Image 1 (cartoon, rainbow, N blue to C red):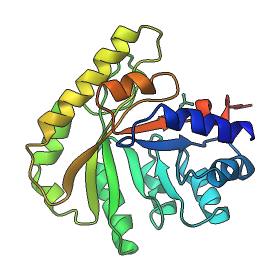
Image 2: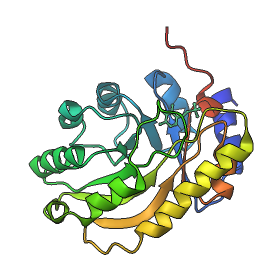
Image 3: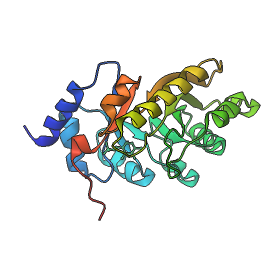
Amino acid sequence: MNSIANNLHTVKNNIPSHVTLVAVSKTKPVSEILEAYNAGQRIFGENKIQEMALKYDEMPKDIEWHMIGHLQRNKVKYMAHFVHLIHGVDSFKTLVEINKQALKHNRVINCLLQLKIAKEDTKFGLSITEVEAILNSEELKELKNIDIKGVMGMASFIEDEAVIRTEFKTLKTFFEKLKRFNLSNFNPTVISMGMSGDYKIAIEEGSTMVRVGSAIFGLRNYS
Ligand SMILES: *Cc1c(COP(=O)(O)O)cnc(C)c1O
């Protein structure tokens, strides 16, 4: 058995059945993604819209494509016809643009709101107050071509497990707090948290969706 298939099996064995595995294939060629596909994987995550669109064109059409990266609003149009879930939504303006592009294709696009849980300033994401303001806004009710499925967060890139665990606990607490909002386009079931280095901790802390790249495909080469 090749190593991508092996790695995939190992990761899957570490994940309970209620947790969804997004195989993060950013920077990896179609040939390698097909190895994971042929081993049964159907959900892939990318962080660049145009790269994902090229791969969508080339690959089997029963794949669910997830956009996990920071979004540039002017590029949402390149994925609006096929994207299954957008993880990194961090502004109301972006929701408006996603809704506009989804409407053009007569689709409803699933989104997650990205919350800032890491202490580092470099991380994107909304505060809980900003999320509550979005969910309270009258304008949100008009966005009938989006469906907000939950939240996404990234822990700090550090070794200290206790800090990582606390950050994941924070996201889980926020998620539970947001469930009180009752809106037709807000149906929270997803907590997207956990990557190759920390997905086991994330699952212990309530993750329902993990985004795992290098543990499946090996290290990325950005050169
Ligand atoms: C790259 C990336 C991942 C996967 O990272 P690995 O450490 O390779 O598992 C997960 N989430 C986001 C947002 C990413 O950009």
